[in-house]
Image 1 (cartoon, rainbow, N blue to C red):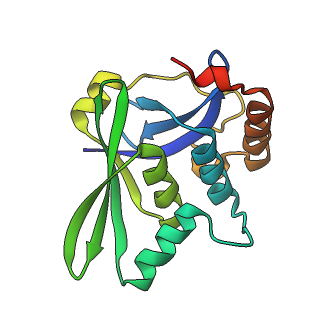
Image 2: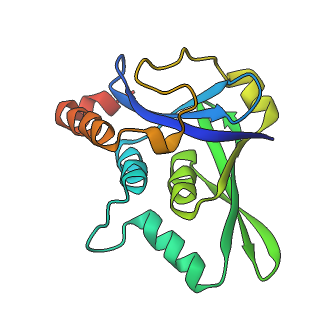
Length: 171
């Protein structure tokens, strides 16, 4: 497994779709891009910003339920790409046992951001799908997810939501 960090959540300009960028913590600096839905992108942005909502959002509820049950998220692993769909697992520790629960990568990352869990990508998946991205002009050399400008990210999602049409989701 390759440990990764959340490099950014951006909006792909060609498809006007949010994309999650998971970059190797060490090594070649490969990045795994995963296209995600706008609600999940917003949930990740809210967690990065520390936005408190009047009622728990779904990923906050998951975190709270795990805590109430005495369980914790050990790690998140993006496991495979099958038929153009990425798969992930939340590895949860409960009663001293590790349990892997299947999840969408976007949901798994949204939970990881809220719980501080480490994120990993399968070696073969990173080898096959990882790409080298040029450094962002506005990103510091050793920037990490804490350096993401939350206001800019939320602005990008608002722009995305204002321009999205139902036919954008048709095959």
